[in-house]
Amino acid sequence: MDTLFAAKNWSNLKLIEVAFYFSIIAGLVLTQCLLFSSPLFADDMRLAKATLAPVGIDTGSVKNKILHEISPEVRENNFNEEIKRKYPNSLIRTVSRGIKHIRLTKYYDGRPVRINVVEVDLKLADGFELRPELSSVSNNLKSRKTITTIAKNSDSVVAINGTYFKPQTGVPLGTLMIDGTLYTGPIYDRVAMGIFDNKFDMARVQVKSYLKASDISVKVDNINQPRMLSSYVLAYSKAWGTTSPATPKYGYQIAIKDNKIIASSTSPLAIPEDGYVIVGPAKQLKPLLSKSKVELIISTTPEWKGVKHIISGGPYLVKNSEVFVDMTAQKLGSIGGKNPRTAIGYTGDNNLIMVTVDGREGSSVGMTLMQLARFMKSIGCINAMNLDGGGSTVMYVDGAVVNRPQVKGGITLSNALVLSKKG
Image 1: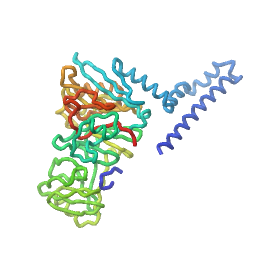
Image 2: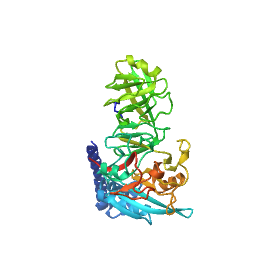
Image 3: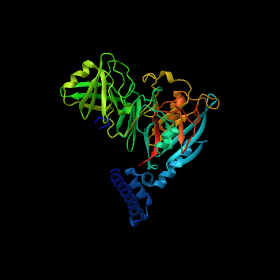
Image 4: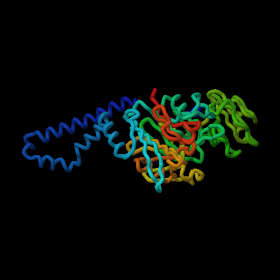
């Protein structure tokens, strides 16, 4: 783990996978030809079928499944048909191959709710990637921009508002990792989605970090987050800004670069390039001053090896294919009631689903978290979570905001979750 808080050939593997699938198809076809064209079985097809039946191989379904996996045309047709089946009586638009934007209205207790959904088959949409994006192009946490600006700066075709943030500063509140760099740590160990090269995962995430210097180990309670207790030890990288925040009572600060302490003070310090400042109780940090090497070690629970990006939210909506709303456990009791909502989830076959719900108006009254959870399950999510909502709820698709946020075009945001072009 380096001082920028970075977390510690697909093509060849895919070639092997395709070759393997083709060998299976060839074997199935050859078996069928040998069995059903051979004179031995030509006169008694029933014998051939009876002989094959105990083996348990449905050659037709196996072949269709393999074709679905390796044939873009078959996969695209199946995806299109599945979207039509899943979202009846809705307006469906193709944004790009494998990316669908769906508009629909549902009624709860006789009141309308306007919903926008983007569903993505990432194998078909292989020229795009899902990633969190900060509002600042220089990755400064204390920044806010509109969703349209964030989307255009990141060359994105789809974007929704991301995790919670501190309104006064724009600093994201909760775990945020982009391209392996951990920008902010968790708040109340809230649920987060891990984004990998070829899959997703969802869990309540903890970040475990500590300073290691020979015989001394100091726990670091969080990274680039507002202070909750004066006893906490916090780390601040250049993404926080040019200088560290104020020192708490009985506190101390040390600046570290290349695993060496380069400055110390009871006052705020300049945050070094490619380095960081640690702020915490003097009795814990001063013993480090005599050490020649100080290393910041960071890990996550769950470990999530190979994770590229992490974005947090809360609460859970769907967990392991069951409705699961743990609002109290994640200290989110204040966001109940019918409100505009934003959610993210994924299906059993790894399709990505992004949802916004308009609210607080007569033509769309919003959803409760339980209603949103049931909706996410109904459209196939095996795991789903709530993102920041209310006035933050906004969805951008193919050059325009497609929902109706309370502020036209959406309020300025700290961060977004975007589907952007690779490269």
